[in-house]
Image: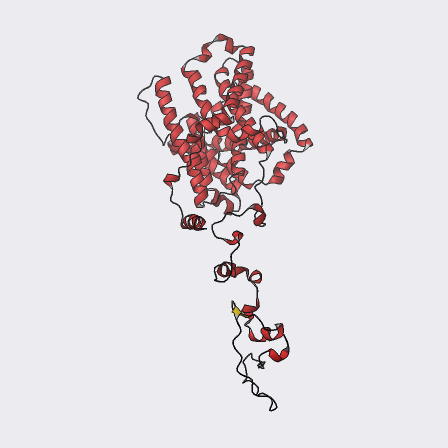
Length: 447
């Protein structure tokens, strides 16, 4: 376009104000007032860059890409066709979300550790009736009980670091912990009434029976996670609480608070651990060092088996309830915590880091934990251990292998699918949908 066809330029003052238009030269007739050029969202379509820069406001010279905070407002303006990726309510693909990283794959190390820990739990329950006739079984029992539940709790704490009491995580806590507790507490009660011929045994949600204490503890621990994130010395504080619990017989059995408080330091330890801490125990030197440490632990347990009350390892009673002086509760709590941490580290050192045939079973350990309790308790109710052959070395090995096979089968995907209604119910009917979710679904339907 030639300059003769352009509208007369209006000089701009230094303050940005406009002066009156200059009169046309005498040799030419006065030009008619220029028509307002068509604009596109406040921008002159046919003005040269220099003239446009002088007449536009600074905010109008930026493109949508230069105004990220206004993108949603611009996307709704008339005259601009929205792209499919900009329509509200549309689920974007991973390629359209460069700021959101894809989900990380599960770490085989932790799945392997969870599976092996839960196998040791089942073995410990199988060895319990054999301790009276076999000192070796008693030594294995004490050694395993020193670290198997602490290891499981440390892993639970490590994977609870992201818990922030947000609505979504609270819903998951209710459906994945609280509801299974209610279901299995009631189921165990009816099982005891039937299998133990005790029809009057009461249902009590305040007094966890057998294995359900762990769900109560996990619920309480996870709810307190935000608190442990802000205190300066979380592990020493948790240890102090455990020591006080061990010398407080008045706590009682409600919600199994003795176990909740005495096992608390292991959960808090898992919260403060970082990936590099687990890398330390995966080193070859740690695996080699774990051999003599476990050997020494077994020798000490063999010596202590006839001299020590194994109930200390259950952490469900105070020192006074175990017939010991109060001060011994503090000593035993600190000593057992130190021994447990060392053996947990040795256990982690032996856990395979690569994927194995049992890695996938690590996702179903809570299924195996709760379901095998019916068989473990049934074996006592129905006097399976009255068979003399089970109290021989071959019988003890057989019981151990059967326990490992049982817990393995209960962790498999078919069992998970069968009991998911009780362990991981969705329960969408029980929760309100927040306003953002409702609005998002409405936009998705309109688009």
